[in-house]
Length: 529
Image 1 (tube, rainbow, N blue to C red):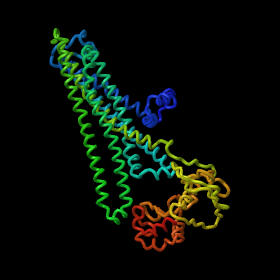
Image 2: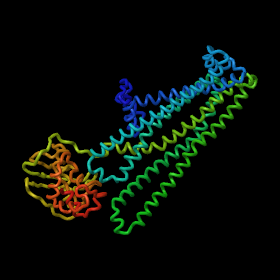
Image 3: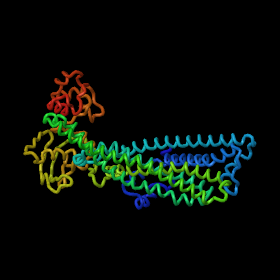
């Protein structure tokens, strides 16, 4: 497979890492590592791009000489245009009567090959982008499922959704944009080689004139990058607010604050659209600005060519015309390159967001133990336990000592904020104590495998969460193999059997988002089951 191509050792990431760390920005290293997983696809993209550039350049260089030949006009001498004569010499073996048809057919064939190469390159780019997007999102999802609960208490759900979906897609598109930039540069290089071969004097003049279009575009690109960051911030706030409203829609309606929430959303939408419009204005201005300045440079070049070849203008008119056609075909590619730069500038903000999401140094991860938990033998103990939430210097629990024997029931009573829920959160290792330890059968809780430990526990919180699925699926959640009888027995023990049987489809009843069709007590019973 293309994604399994083995790179030479000198080109692998571990060998190139010191160079990347020195020259590649930290946020971009995420994409570099991701891209190097698919070297075959990247190589195929660039190879097809180079092929398309070569076919494009040669076919363009042949157009004017072939038209002149068909019209029966005299072609430029080898002394004045060696590259043109070299290309035309390929048809020396064709009878003179058929040379014009052969040349026209060759141009048509080269154009078809160019279009096929471009089409294949776009397909390869799309396939690569799809793989990159899936790979990046899997990496993000794995990190989010491994990170401690503290991260989710500090991050808004809307912000996470935006990062996972929009920012990830935009970030992976950067690799495709960079590949397209490389292909555009290769195409421009091929055209430059042909232009230099025709007239180095005109190419020098072109080199002096062509920097003006990029300079005109640079200002627009820098402003677009600034707007992109502002759009990211507003989109994040809008998504977060929207999810909060929909999650708390019962509270919004019960307090009759629909108009207030609508006003806040409307303000965010208005700000977003204003910045989006200004960003779009800049984006739409990039290509026209580039084209206008390029055309001005082209006309300046024509007058320069007329001055350079004033004495032999008639003899070199075909050469000058070929040069202008090549240059004219190259200008849209330069405009395209400027557009790609603008897209790259707009997408960089998402790369920075994804880099921050994938960072591990600013998140907490619980170290997994090596012992598999099977069942409780003696009891659970808290020994000189103290706890403070990550990032906070204040202790929530201080020097707690407690032992709960197997088979006993413990009720923690205290005022709000006394730490009752915190103690419960420490048992499944949602957090780890800062001092002391929790033991199960005299074994430190940290020595147990987290997944085996949590599978043996049942947690029912005050704010019960149920999935938008059937009652059966919610009860069996987390149990890979469970029978119908086991589910029914669980409902009986949780005193949920009777009201479930009265529902339209029993266990197969869809309960809606967060179990909205059930009462608070019914949701608690489903959670207990």
